[in-house]
Length: 212
Image (cartoon, rainbow, N blue to C red; front, side):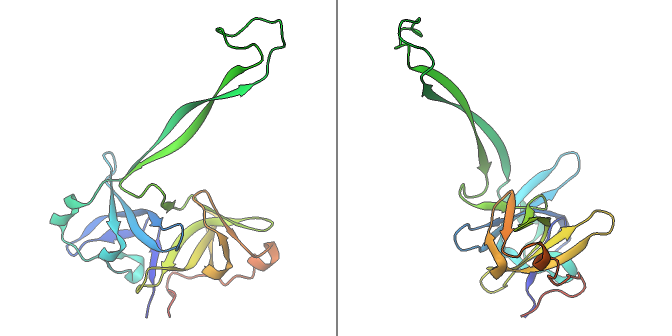
């Protein structure tokens, strides 16, 4: 059975026509199961919606086909992501005995405000992993490339392969079996091979999608 091949920026279609491009995928951090697609539509006024993986019919020719009608699009939640800055006081000894107290506090305990940045997301689970084509793929000696495709089993939606892209004008693509992945992260994915081993990974061609 042909696997579902989700390429970032691939066209997404309902049963009636085009509805956007794949911007991100949502992954369960424990099972590495793909749970949702984040699809972006529009140029100046973009709308980014979250579609459950169950709505996917197929990914023929790298076009993602959803088994829904255009009228149903308004029922899906929008995705928003912002960064929230929070001040957190930490305490450090900065003054010696006999020096001026800080607002009546003991002189040896001076509060130091540190800023903690947290991501706030609407439309997906707060613990979910969100991957896109900015996610780096790293081997043991450095960087292989960026994430280009996520390939999943159509029966249980577990990730079976990743595809790394390297280069801009004439990019090369390498197929990475999921058993070689040591860690999935939003900013970077770590794989087990070293540089020499990573260079022997099979090349991936869009015309020959992964099959069972």
